[in-house]
Image (tube, rainbow over all chains, first blue to last red; front, side, top):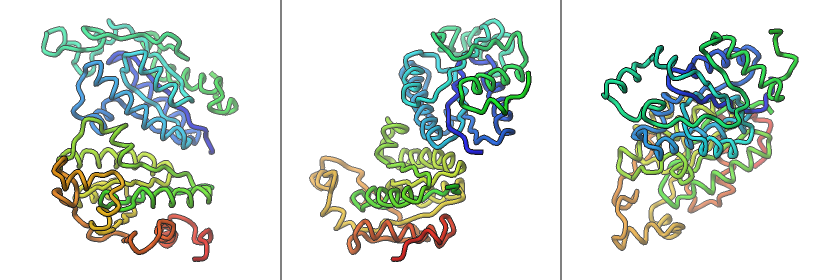
Length: 183
Length: 183
């Protein structure tokens, strides 16, 4: 299937469910025959940003690098799904402008729920003072001002969230409406 | 045109002609309708590797990042042309193994000719002692042990060099033989 590229950017707190939604969405798009690449924040930190920390400057640099790679893939027709905290509005807007074909999804799961899940144990370590600079605890998260979609994974299962992103992609014309399954 | 991806890796000294060959090759492949991306060492340093220096460790990290991006693009059918000094054999072999579809081109223009050209003025600055760690002067360059192709841009013009890479790509089956123009 010939596809026009797009970057779907999932932003939200650690534990919000970004990677899970990304995985579900990727499976759905691949099943349709689209070329898909998932750029997960943690994987990118290993491959492109080792040595960067979590200051605002380093976080911005990390996001710009993900944006650079997303732009390259998007312009070659890949559907790129980014799952990265990306806490700052200005640099999200910067990569949006750079990439052009860009769908911002705010995975808006509340802090309390993220902390209850705490899949990496980060919130526990932050509350005990072992680490600092955790987004939502003692580091800022700037909520998207105009995301194409907002998800709250407290109330809906990951599969349903992935389907909602898929439907937005169809509505925005990035994938054919005809391949949209009945909900 | 549907294309299978490949990474064409141009290695050689500063001033050897890597970027010029990359540009000529890219134009030739684009004219055939192939999706092409040129990853130039200097551009990558700006976008992915700001802050890295020219120690062996930092050079290797830089090459691994270029390799990571090349792998992503290659597996989505893009013909990636890398132009980077990439002086160390081990990390070149590492990215070759990682990417799989990989054509190593040694742009083997001799140091004397690179220094005569000195397009960035680096050799003059190295000889005057203003900078250190310049590949070929006071930093190692490990010549490829088994490149798919060796070019010497002293003797042939860039257009001819680009055509030789193109012909190797056809011979190795990365592009159709039929689209090869008569030489």
